[in-house]
Image 1 (tube, rainbow, N blue to C red):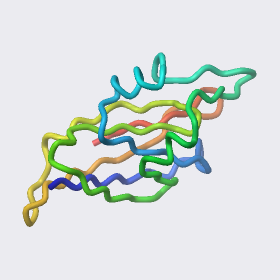
Image 2 (image 1 turned 135 degrees about the vertical axis):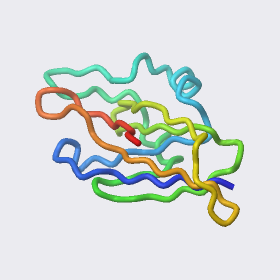
Image 3 (image 1 turned 90 degrees about the horizontal axis):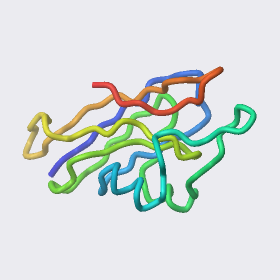
Length: 127
């Protein structure tokens, strides 16, 4: 059994926008399945043009600005990444160096926001 703990740092950029944590598929397969070219969506007059449906995102765990989520994972899940409402993708984290606690391998990651103001904001995992 695995446990993924994600702490989202408080940032002004995208403060009101939840992110979704995608598990159960790797980033490349997810991008191919939903026809996502590149990590960031297109913009028009500085506003992002959404490229993914909210119905798809509802399958995953959301995390709000400044929150922490714990996700219980099966042993066969080896990666995770985050996505915004508009379809901006984070880097992919590989779950291979966790800490064993009472039979559960625990992985701790911090999620921040890059960009903002003059640049499109997007999620980014840091260790």
